[in-house]
Image (tube, rainbow, N blue to C red):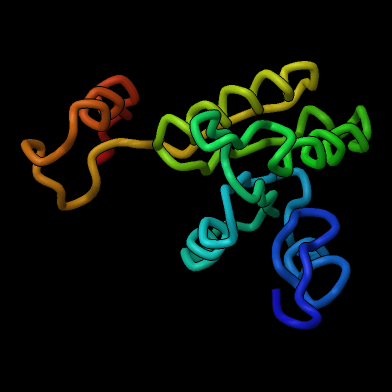
Length: 156
């Protein structure tokens, strides 16, 4: 890392301060936490401009084939963040999994879901399906299957 750049103590985003500008921003919803694999995921979501929650950067995904296990990424600090939320606010917590649509991303999401199950919180994931402008015949089977399974009401 460059001189003065370090991981945020709260979310693991890169920052020059102890806590990043997203975590200290009082207009951000601290109970809405988007879990991303790395800084690129955080930047992609920040660039859309309408997400008003905070982030948690894992620093990787679980990949047994590459020797990366749960202890090699920032999972424990996420459960620590939730454990300090007051019991009155716990039902308002939402964790959004914004992890890659890969076997490793799905494995990480499943593992994390199990770790979060003792908490009475909402856990969601990004919608996945056929991309805007994509022809159906070019979509892979998994994407098309998920699109059918997670179809939404048509709104004219």
